[in-house]
Length: 138
Image (cartoon, rainbow, N blue to C red; front, side, top):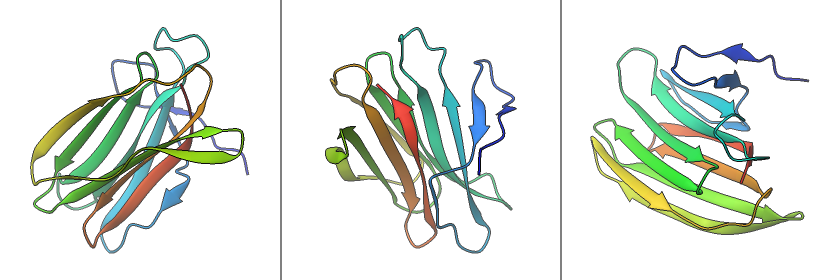
């Protein structure tokens, strides 16, 4: 089933898309977005976010294709765990896996990757679930 593109209320032209993975439990739900207009020809930036539907708590991983930059945001009272992979053909390789970010903390990670590689990012909140998107590109 094709995803319906819906503009998000942000300053950049990002679009909400169906997440590749959503294992949110209870009040936790996954939200994902893609943005192909970040000045990286062929690149597609985006994010995966696991949000509590009743509070402002969330964990989010943002990927910027221009420069392969990741921002890991934990706005919860729990530990958040983040993963990022890239693909060469059908083979998956690790950018980073299991990076833990403490409650109400943020971390930035820069990586290098050749152009036009598929990128997969995942944000998880301890015992609350995960959100992931696998349709981003370097």
